[in-house]
Image (cartoon, rainbow, N blue to C red; front, side, top):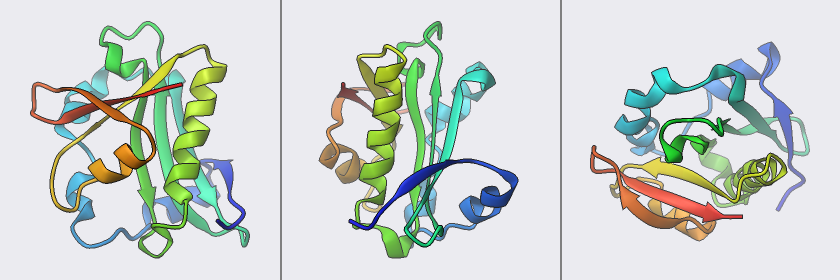
Length: 151
């Protein structure tokens, strides 16, 4: 795996994060309906957006999570909302690196697990989430998978 590092989302990196090109078909899985419905419950102060930079300081990934120990829904307390990896960087460890960084941050904040929601489908992220250690623990009212990663 190339040398990767996290960087805060800034005016300089947001444009690159927004222009990451995914593999064909992956765009349909960017925002699960469960998260769309829960967005108004998200405490902006707990938002954790980061970009992943490669050894040349090129943005190759984006991760957004949220931390809210008091969230009414358990799955929103330490929730991974998005992981985007540039099509050409997929399979090189960028996504795994980003998820590990989020998990480390959650552990530092006193959480014992993190959650993620995803929709099923051929181009969806299910195999990725399973490969990085998430286990399916349920289903949302919208029929999406709810996964948890024990820390």
